[in-house]
Amino acid sequence: MKWRLFNIALCIIISGFFLLSKLVFDKVYITSQVVIDEEFHIPQGLAYCNFVFDTWDPKITTLPGLYLISALLMGPIGFCSVYWLRFVNVMASVLNLFLFYIYFSMNNNKQ
Image (cartoon, rainbow, N blue to C red; front, side, top):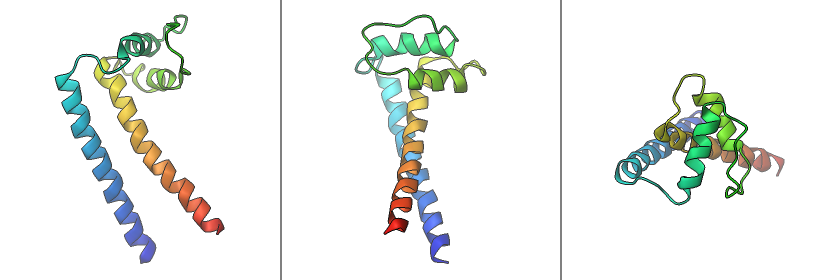
């Protein structure tokens, strides 16, 4: 019973986090053209999403992880737009919250 309530609470927290993130995401998307250093990242993300892997902007200093994930998730279904590239980040943040839960659960069980 205790674990069931905990799992329900976890689902509510993750759902609430996603909903709040989505609301903020949509507001930022509607009210701004370019956020922070997107002038470099958006063209790179769009290239990867369209399976053009032989281009790289030397101003970008991060590894291409999110570009590759975007290409795998959004490329095959044709969702290669600024909105969907940004949305991949929202989903990654929700996934990170869940991964933190798993990590802390594993470490808590060791003690």
